[in-house]
Amino acid sequence: MSFTTLGLSDAIVRAVTEAGYTQPTPIQTQAIPAVMNGGDLLAGAQTGTGKTAGFTLPIVHRLSTDKIGAGFTNKTSQRSIRALILAPTRELAAQVEESVRSYGKYTNLNSAVIFGGVGINPQIKQLKQGIDILVATPGRLLDHMEQRTVDLSKVEILILDEADRMLDMGFIRDIKKVLAALPPKRQNLLFSATFSEEIKALADGLLNKPAMIEVARRNSTVEVIAQKIHPVDRDKKHPMLAHLIKSNNWSQVLVFTRTKHGANKLVDQLGADGIGALAIHGNKSQTARTRALSEFKDGTLQVLVATDIAARGIDIDQLPHVVNYDLPNIPEDYVHRIGRTGRAGATGEAVSLVCVDEHDMLKDIEKLIKQTLPRQVIEGFEPDMNARAQPIQLRSGAPGHGGRGGRPGGGGGAGQVIRVGAGGRGSSKPRSAGPGGGGGGNSRGPRTAAPQRSGGRGR
Image (tube, rainbow, N blue to C red; front, side, top):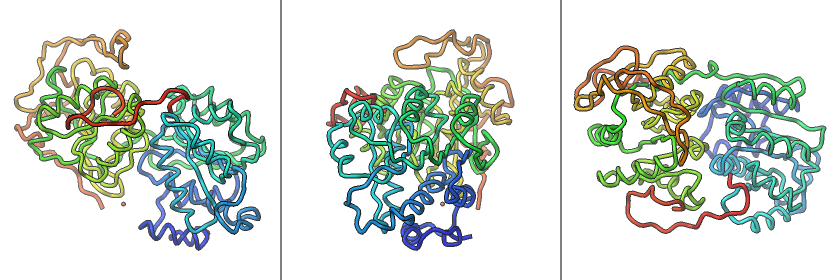
Protein backbone atom coordinates (compact mmCIF):
# COMPACT_ATOMS: atom_id res chain seq x y z
CA MET A 1 0.00 0.00 0.00
CA SER A 2 1.19 3.54 -0.79
CA PHE A 3 0.24 6.94 0.59
CA THR A 4 -1.61 7.65 -2.65
CA THR A 5 -3.92 4.66 -2.19
CA LEU A 6 -4.85 5.98 1.27
CA GLY A 7 -6.62 8.87 -0.45
CA LEU A 8 -4.25 11.68 0.48
CA SER A 9 -4.08 14.68 -1.84
CA ASP A 10 -1.33 15.05 -4.43
CA ALA A 11 0.11 18.00 -2.52
CA ILE A 12 0.51 15.92 0.64
CA VAL A 13 1.85 12.84 -1.16
CA ARG A 14 4.44 15.08 -2.82
CA ALA A 15 5.56 16.42 0.56
CA VAL A 16 5.67 12.93 2.08
CA THR A 17 7.72 11.62 -0.84
CA GLU A 18 10.18 14.49 -0.52
CA ALA A 19 10.54 13.63 3.17
CA GLY A 20 11.77 10.19 2.08
CA TYR A 21 8.74 8.06 2.93
CA THR A 22 7.27 5.65 0.39
CA GLN A 23 5.12 3.22 2.37
CA PRO A 24 2.89 3.88 5.38
CA THR A 25 3.51 2.10 8.68
CA PRO A 26 0.82 -0.18 10.13
CA ILE A 27 -0.66 2.52 12.34
CA GLN A 28 -0.69 4.99 9.44
CA THR A 29 -2.47 2.45 7.25
CA GLN A 30 -5.21 2.14 9.86
CA ALA A 31 -5.36 5.63 11.34
CA ILE A 32 -5.30 7.75 8.19
CA PRO A 33 -8.57 6.39 6.72
CA ALA A 34 -10.21 6.46 10.17
CA VAL A 35 -9.33 10.11 10.72
CA MET A 36 -10.31 11.10 7.19
CA ASN A 37 -13.67 9.43 7.79
CA GLY A 38 -14.40 12.04 10.44
CA GLY A 39 -15.12 9.82 13.45
CA ASP A 40 -13.44 9.69 16.84
CA LEU A 41 -10.37 7.50 17.29
CA LEU A 42 -8.66 5.72 20.20
CA ALA A 43 -5.20 4.57 19.16
CA GLY A 44 -2.67 2.56 21.14
CA ALA A 45 0.71 3.32 19.65
CA GLN A 46 4.12 3.40 21.23
CA THR A 47 7.13 5.50 20.35
CA GLY A 48 8.59 4.78 16.93
CA THR A 49 5.44 3.49 15.23
CA GLY A 50 4.89 6.51 13.00
CA LYS A 51 1.86 7.69 14.97
CA THR A 52 2.59 11.39 14.44
CA ALA A 53 2.12 11.10 10.68
CA GLY A 54 -0.85 8.85 11.43
CA PHE A 55 -2.83 11.89 12.59
CA THR A 56 -1.02 14.87 11.02
CA LEU A 57 -1.36 13.62 7.44
CA PRO A 58 -5.15 13.10 7.46
CA ILE A 59 -5.70 16.34 9.40
CA VAL A 60 -3.72 18.34 6.85
CA HIS A 61 -5.62 16.56 4.07
CA ARG A 62 -9.05 17.23 5.56
CA LEU A 63 -8.46 20.89 6.37
CA SER A 64 -6.76 21.69 3.05
CA THR A 65 -9.32 20.01 0.80
CA ASP A 66 -12.64 20.94 2.41
CA LYS A 67 -14.60 24.04 1.38
CA ILE A 68 -12.78 26.38 3.77
CA GLY A 69 -9.27 25.11 3.08
CA ALA A 70 -9.75 24.93 -0.67
CA GLY A 71 -10.83 28.56 -0.61
CA PHE A 72 -7.47 29.82 0.65
CA THR A 73 -5.17 31.25 -2.02
CA ASN A 74 -2.22 31.80 0.32
CA LYS A 75 -0.95 30.96 3.80
CA THR A 76 -1.33 34.45 5.25
CA SER A 77 -5.03 35.27 4.87
CA GLN A 78 -7.07 35.55 8.07
CA ARG A 79 -8.34 32.24 9.43
CA SER A 80 -9.44 30.49 12.63
CA ILE A 81 -7.91 27.59 14.54
CA ARG A 82 -9.63 24.46 13.23
CA ALA A 83 -7.38 21.74 14.68
CA LEU A 84 -5.85 21.67 18.16
CA ILE A 85 -3.10 19.19 19.05
CA LEU A 86 -2.12 18.86 22.72
CA ALA A 87 1.24 17.31 23.58
CA PRO A 88 2.89 16.80 26.99
CA THR A 89 6.27 18.47 26.44
CA ARG A 90 7.92 21.26 24.52
CA GLU A 91 10.07 18.89 22.50
CA LEU A 92 7.19 16.72 21.38
CA ALA A 93 5.00 19.73 20.59
CA ALA A 94 7.76 21.26 18.46
CA GLN A 95 8.31 17.98 16.66
CA VAL A 96 4.62 17.52 15.89
CA GLU A 97 4.30 21.07 14.53
CA GLU A 98 7.38 20.51 12.39
CA SER A 99 5.64 17.48 10.89
CA VAL A 100 2.48 19.49 10.21
CA ARG A 101 4.53 22.19 8.51
CA SER A 102 6.50 19.68 6.46
CA TYR A 103 3.50 17.71 5.23
CA GLY A 104 1.46 20.83 4.56
CA LYS A 105 4.08 22.88 2.75
CA TYR A 106 2.35 22.52 -0.62
CA THR A 107 -1.04 23.47 0.81
CA ASN A 108 -2.27 26.89 1.93
CA LEU A 109 -2.60 25.82 5.57
CA ASN A 110 -0.41 27.24 8.28
CA SER A 111 0.45 26.11 11.79
CA ALA A 112 2.03 27.26 15.04
CA VAL A 113 3.37 25.74 18.23
CA ILE A 114 3.10 27.28 21.69
CA PHE A 115 4.81 26.06 24.87
CA GLY A 116 6.23 27.44 28.07
CA GLY A 117 9.82 28.32 28.87
CA VAL A 118 9.94 31.00 26.18
CA GLY A 119 8.41 34.45 25.82
CA ILE A 120 4.66 34.61 25.32
CA ASN A 121 4.50 37.85 23.28
CA PRO A 122 5.84 36.39 20.00
CA GLN A 123 3.25 33.63 20.36
CA ILE A 124 0.48 36.19 20.81
CA LYS A 125 1.60 37.97 17.66
CA GLN A 126 1.60 34.73 15.68
CA LEU A 127 -1.84 33.74 16.94
CA LYS A 128 -3.26 37.11 15.89
CA GLN A 129 -2.13 36.47 12.32
CA GLY A 130 -4.42 33.46 12.03
CA ILE A 131 -3.61 29.76 12.41
CA ASP A 132 -5.23 26.64 10.95
CA ILE A 133 -3.51 24.02 13.13
CA LEU A 134 -2.27 24.82 16.63
CA VAL A 135 0.07 22.51 18.56
CA ALA A 136 0.35 23.32 22.26
CA THR A 137 1.34 22.10 25.67
CA PRO A 138 -1.61 22.31 28.10
CA GLY A 139 -0.04 24.79 30.52
CA ARG A 140 0.93 27.42 27.98
CA LEU A 141 -2.38 27.04 26.16
CA LEU A 142 -4.16 27.87 29.43
CA ASP A 143 -1.94 30.94 29.79
CA HIS A 144 -3.22 32.17 26.43
CA MET A 145 -6.80 31.27 27.30
CA GLU A 146 -6.58 33.26 30.54
CA GLN A 147 -5.15 36.24 28.65
CA ARG A 148 -7.76 35.79 25.92
CA THR A 149 -5.09 35.68 23.24
CA VAL A 150 -6.32 32.46 21.64
CA ASP A 151 -9.74 31.68 20.14
CA LEU A 152 -10.76 28.02 20.21
CA SER A 153 -14.39 28.54 19.24
CA LYS A 154 -13.92 27.20 15.71
CA VAL A 155 -11.94 24.04 16.57
CA GLU A 156 -13.21 21.07 14.55
CA ILE A 157 -10.58 18.46 15.48
CA LEU A 158 -8.92 17.80 18.86
CA ILE A 159 -5.91 15.50 19.19
CA LEU A 160 -4.44 14.36 22.50
CA ASP A 161 -0.98 13.02 21.70
CA GLU A 162 0.71 10.80 24.31
CA ALA A 163 -2.30 11.20 26.56
CA ASP A 164 -0.85 8.78 29.10
CA ARG A 165 2.16 11.03 29.60
CA MET A 166 -0.02 14.11 30.02
CA LEU A 167 -1.93 12.35 32.79
CA ASP A 168 1.32 11.17 34.40
CA MET A 169 2.49 14.79 34.45
CA GLY A 170 -0.68 15.97 36.18
CA PHE A 171 -2.27 17.77 33.24
CA ILE A 172 -5.74 16.27 33.65
CA ARG A 173 -7.22 19.46 35.16
CA ASP A 174 -5.63 21.59 32.45
CA ILE A 175 -7.00 19.25 29.78
CA LYS A 176 -10.50 19.46 31.24
CA LYS A 177 -10.33 23.26 31.22
CA VAL A 178 -9.32 23.19 27.56
CA LEU A 179 -12.12 20.75 26.71
CA ALA A 180 -14.64 23.07 28.33
CA ALA A 181 -13.60 25.87 25.97
CA LEU A 182 -14.02 23.83 22.79
CA PRO A 183 -17.14 23.49 20.64
CA PRO A 184 -19.08 20.39 21.75
CA LYS A 185 -19.37 19.12 18.18
CA ARG A 186 -15.92 18.08 17.02
CA GLN A 187 -13.76 15.10 16.08
CA ASN A 188 -11.62 13.72 18.93
CA LEU A 189 -8.45 11.65 18.50
CA LEU A 190 -6.66 10.12 21.49
CA PHE A 191 -3.23 8.53 21.16
CA SER A 192 -1.63 6.70 24.08
CA ALA A 193 1.21 4.22 24.45
CA THR A 194 -0.46 2.56 27.43
CA PHE A 195 -4.04 2.01 28.59
CA SER A 196 -4.29 2.70 32.30
CA GLU A 197 -7.60 3.05 34.10
CA GLU A 198 -7.15 6.83 33.96
CA ILE A 199 -6.77 6.73 30.18
CA LYS A 200 -9.85 4.56 29.85
CA ALA A 201 -11.83 7.00 31.98
CA LEU A 202 -10.63 9.94 29.89
CA ALA A 203 -11.51 8.14 26.67
CA ASP A 204 -14.97 7.20 27.95
CA GLY A 205 -15.78 10.82 28.70
CA LEU A 206 -14.21 12.27 25.56
CA LEU A 207 -14.79 9.90 22.66
CA ASN A 208 -18.05 9.08 20.90
CA LYS A 209 -18.19 5.56 19.45
CA PRO A 210 -14.51 5.68 18.50
CA ALA A 211 -12.69 3.49 16.05
CA MET A 212 -10.03 1.56 17.97
CA ILE A 213 -6.52 0.84 16.75
CA GLU A 214 -3.70 -0.85 18.59
CA VAL A 215 -0.31 -1.46 17.05
CA ALA A 216 1.88 -4.16 18.61
CA ARG A 217 1.02 -5.93 21.85
CA ARG A 218 0.04 -3.62 24.67
CA ASN A 219 3.04 -2.61 26.77
CA SER A 220 5.25 -4.84 24.62
CA THR A 221 8.87 -4.15 23.80
CA VAL A 222 10.17 -4.23 20.27
CA GLU A 223 11.70 -7.57 19.31
CA VAL A 224 14.66 -6.02 17.47
CA ILE A 225 15.87 -4.44 20.73
CA ALA A 226 18.43 -6.52 22.61
CA GLN A 227 17.68 -5.92 26.29
CA LYS A 228 20.01 -6.77 29.16
CA ILE A 229 20.50 -6.07 32.85
CA HIS A 230 23.92 -5.32 34.34
CA PRO A 231 23.79 -5.89 38.13
CA VAL A 232 26.00 -3.32 39.87
CA ASP A 233 26.42 -1.60 43.23
CA ARG A 234 24.83 1.85 43.36
CA ASP A 235 28.19 3.63 43.75
CA LYS A 236 29.69 1.79 40.77
CA LYS A 237 27.08 2.82 38.21
CA HIS A 238 29.02 5.78 36.86
CA PRO A 239 32.33 3.89 36.45
CA MET A 240 30.46 1.02 34.78
CA LEU A 241 28.74 3.36 32.32
CA ALA A 242 32.02 5.03 31.41
CA HIS A 243 33.57 1.59 30.96
CA LEU A 244 30.77 0.41 28.68
CA ILE A 245 30.91 3.54 26.53
CA LYS A 246 34.68 3.41 26.11
CA SER A 247 35.22 -0.35 25.79
CA ASN A 248 32.43 -0.73 23.25
CA ASN A 249 33.20 2.50 21.38
CA TRP A 250 29.62 3.72 21.70
CA SER A 251 29.31 6.94 19.70
CA GLN A 252 25.66 7.84 20.32
CA VAL A 253 24.10 6.94 23.67
CA LEU A 254 20.86 8.12 25.25
CA VAL A 255 21.06 7.74 29.05
CA PHE A 256 18.08 8.02 31.39
CA THR A 257 18.30 9.18 34.99
CA ARG A 258 15.54 9.42 37.56
CA THR A 259 16.16 13.03 38.65
CA LYS A 260 17.38 16.33 37.24
CA HIS A 261 20.16 16.52 39.83
CA GLY A 262 21.24 13.00 38.91
CA ALA A 263 21.39 13.98 35.24
CA ASN A 264 23.59 17.01 35.94
CA LYS A 265 25.88 15.02 38.24
CA LEU A 266 26.32 12.22 35.72
CA VAL A 267 27.17 14.65 32.92
CA ASP A 268 29.89 16.22 35.06
CA GLN A 269 31.27 12.78 35.95
CA LEU A 270 31.35 11.67 32.31
CA GLY A 271 33.03 14.93 31.38
CA ALA A 272 35.79 14.18 33.88
CA ASP A 273 36.22 10.85 32.07
CA GLY A 274 36.67 12.61 28.74
CA ILE A 275 33.21 11.65 27.46
CA GLY A 276 31.23 14.48 25.88
CA ALA A 277 27.76 14.71 27.41
CA LEU A 278 24.92 17.16 27.94
CA ALA A 279 21.73 16.92 29.99
CA ILE A 280 18.16 17.85 29.16
CA HIS A 281 15.49 18.24 31.82
CA GLY A 282 12.80 20.61 33.00
CA ASN A 283 15.21 23.09 34.59
CA LYS A 284 17.01 23.67 31.30
CA SER A 285 16.10 26.63 29.13
CA GLN A 286 14.44 25.82 25.84
CA THR A 287 17.52 27.13 24.04
CA ALA A 288 19.78 24.74 25.92
CA ARG A 289 17.45 21.78 25.36
CA THR A 290 17.09 22.46 21.66
CA ARG A 291 20.84 22.81 21.23
CA ALA A 292 21.59 19.58 23.09
CA LEU A 293 19.04 17.65 21.04
CA SER A 294 20.38 19.09 17.79
CA GLU A 295 23.97 18.16 18.61
CA PHE A 296 22.94 14.68 19.68
CA LYS A 297 20.92 14.09 16.52
CA ASP A 298 23.69 15.23 14.19
CA GLY A 299 26.26 13.07 15.97
CA THR A 300 28.48 15.78 17.43
CA LEU A 301 27.36 14.94 20.98
CA GLN A 302 28.29 11.46 22.20
CA VAL A 303 26.00 11.14 25.23
CA LEU A 304 22.66 12.76 25.98
CA VAL A 305 21.47 12.36 29.58
CA ALA A 306 17.74 12.88 30.02
CA THR A 307 14.90 12.59 32.48
CA ASP A 308 11.73 10.85 31.32
CA ILE A 309 9.68 14.01 30.91
CA ALA A 310 12.34 15.93 28.98
CA ALA A 311 12.98 12.98 26.67
CA ARG A 312 9.46 12.99 25.25
CA GLY A 313 9.73 13.97 21.63
CA ILE A 314 13.23 12.63 21.06
CA ASP A 315 12.94 10.92 17.70
CA ILE A 316 16.20 9.69 16.19
CA ASP A 317 16.36 7.12 13.43
CA GLN A 318 18.63 4.17 14.18
CA LEU A 319 19.66 5.27 17.67
CA PRO A 320 21.92 2.35 18.64
CA HIS A 321 22.06 2.51 22.45
CA VAL A 322 19.71 3.40 25.29
CA VAL A 323 20.96 3.07 28.87
CA ASN A 324 18.76 3.06 31.96
CA TYR A 325 21.23 4.50 34.44
CA ASP A 326 18.33 4.51 36.90
CA LEU A 327 15.28 2.31 36.44
CA PRO A 328 12.05 4.31 36.14
CA ASN A 329 9.64 4.20 39.06
CA ILE A 330 6.77 3.85 36.56
CA PRO A 331 7.13 0.52 34.70
CA GLU A 332 5.52 1.85 31.50
CA ASP A 333 8.33 4.40 31.25
CA TYR A 334 10.72 1.53 30.60
CA VAL A 335 8.79 0.76 27.42
CA HIS A 336 8.83 4.43 26.43
CA ARG A 337 12.56 4.68 27.05
CA ILE A 338 13.79 1.67 25.13
CA GLY A 339 11.36 2.38 22.30
CA ARG A 340 13.76 5.07 21.16
CA THR A 341 16.10 2.44 19.78
CA GLY A 342 15.36 -0.43 17.39
CA ARG A 343 13.27 1.77 15.11
CA ALA A 344 12.44 1.41 11.44
CA GLY A 345 13.70 -2.19 11.34
CA ALA A 346 17.12 -1.34 12.76
CA THR A 347 18.56 -3.27 15.69
CA GLY A 348 19.11 -1.53 18.98
CA GLU A 349 20.46 -2.22 22.44
CA ALA A 350 18.83 -1.29 25.74
CA VAL A 351 21.05 -1.68 28.80
CA SER A 352 19.89 -1.22 32.40
CA LEU A 353 22.30 -0.70 35.30
CA VAL A 354 20.44 -2.18 38.26
CA CYS A 355 21.45 -1.95 41.91
CA VAL A 356 19.88 -3.68 44.90
CA ASP A 357 17.61 -0.68 45.55
CA GLU A 358 15.84 -1.29 42.25
CA HIS A 359 14.94 -4.98 42.54
CA ASP A 360 11.23 -4.33 43.00
CA MET A 361 11.21 -1.86 40.11
CA LEU A 362 12.78 -4.50 37.90
CA LYS A 363 10.17 -7.04 38.97
CA ASP A 364 7.40 -4.59 38.06
CA ILE A 365 8.95 -3.96 34.64
CA GLU A 366 9.34 -7.65 33.87
CA LYS A 367 5.76 -8.28 34.94
CA LEU A 368 4.57 -5.55 32.59
CA ILE A 369 6.52 -6.72 29.54
CA LYS A 370 5.92 -10.38 30.38
CA GLN A 371 9.53 -11.49 30.08
CA THR A 372 12.56 -12.03 32.29
CA LEU A 373 15.49 -9.94 31.12
CA PRO A 374 18.95 -11.55 31.00
CA ARG A 375 21.42 -10.53 33.71
CA GLN A 376 25.09 -10.05 32.83
CA VAL A 377 27.66 -9.30 35.51
CA ILE A 378 30.57 -7.27 34.13
CA GLU A 379 34.03 -8.37 35.26
CA GLY A 380 35.42 -5.84 37.71
CA PHE A 381 31.95 -4.58 38.63
CA GLU A 382 30.60 -7.56 40.53
CA PRO A 383 27.89 -6.41 42.98
CA ASP A 384 28.14 -6.96 46.72
CA MET A 385 25.85 -9.92 47.33
CA ASN A 386 25.33 -8.77 50.95
CA ALA A 387 24.23 -5.24 50.07
CA ARG A 388 20.91 -4.08 51.46
CA ALA A 389 18.43 -1.88 49.68
CA GLN A 390 18.08 1.79 50.57
CA PRO A 391 15.17 4.17 49.90
CA ILE A 392 15.15 5.57 46.38
CA GLN A 393 14.95 9.28 45.66
CA LEU A 394 12.10 9.59 43.17
CA ARG A 395 12.50 13.24 42.27
CA SER A 396 15.10 15.97 42.65
CA GLY A 397 15.27 17.37 46.14
CA ALA A 398 12.81 14.89 47.61
CA PRO A 399 13.55 11.96 49.87
CA GLY A 400 12.52 8.48 48.93
CA HIS A 401 9.05 7.26 49.70
CA GLY A 402 10.07 4.33 51.81
CA GLY A 403 12.05 2.79 48.98
CA ARG A 404 11.17 -0.01 46.65
CA GLY A 405 13.60 -2.57 47.95
CA GLY A 406 14.30 -3.46 51.54
CA ARG A 407 15.46 -6.93 50.72
CA PRO A 408 19.01 -8.22 50.98
CA GLY A 409 20.61 -9.66 47.91
CA GLY A 410 22.91 -9.05 44.98
CA GLY A 411 22.74 -6.16 42.59
CA GLY A 412 20.82 -7.88 39.86
CA GLY A 413 17.79 -9.37 41.49
CA ALA A 414 16.40 -12.77 40.78
CA GLY A 415 16.99 -14.51 37.52
CA GLN A 416 19.78 -16.04 35.53
CA VAL A 417 23.18 -14.39 35.93
CA ILE A 418 25.61 -14.58 33.03
CA ARG A 419 29.20 -13.55 33.55
CA VAL A 420 30.94 -11.85 30.67
CA GLY A 421 34.35 -10.41 30.08
CA ALA A 422 35.40 -6.83 30.58
CA GLY A 423 34.17 -5.84 27.14
CA GLY A 424 30.62 -6.03 28.41
CA ARG A 425 29.02 -7.70 25.40
CA GLY A 426 29.75 -11.34 26.13
CA SER A 427 28.05 -13.78 23.82
CA SER A 428 24.81 -11.83 23.80
CA LYS A 429 24.52 -9.84 20.58
CA PRO A 430 21.67 -7.66 19.36
CA ARG A 431 19.32 -9.64 17.18
CA SER A 432 19.29 -8.59 13.58
CA ALA A 433 16.15 -7.49 11.80
CA GLY A 434 14.90 -6.70 8.43
CA PRO A 435 13.14 3.43 8.68
CA GLY A 436 22.14 25.73 29.77
CA GLY A 437 19.69 26.77 31.79
CA GLY A 438 19.86 24.92 35.13
CA GLY A 439 23.18 24.39 36.80
CA GLY A 440 25.52 21.60 35.87
CA GLY A 441 24.85 19.10 33.16
CA ASN A 442 27.60 20.18 30.76
CA SER A 443 30.81 18.24 30.46
CA ARG A 444 32.34 20.31 27.70
CA GLY A 445 33.24 23.48 29.47
CA PRO A 446 31.29 26.69 30.09
CA ARG A 447 28.44 27.43 27.70
CA THR A 448 26.03 30.28 27.49
CA ALA A 449 22.35 29.59 27.33
CA ALA A 450 19.14 31.54 27.35
CA PRO A 451 17.88 32.05 30.89
CA GLN A 452 14.99 29.95 32.08
CA ARG A 453 11.92 32.12 31.87
CA SER A 454 9.25 32.23 34.49
CA GLY A 455 5.65 33.06 33.83
CA GLY A 456 3.56 30.28 32.38
CA ARG A 457 3.48 26.66 33.18
CA GLY A 458 6.69 25.71 31.46
CA ARG A 459 5.60 22.58 29.70
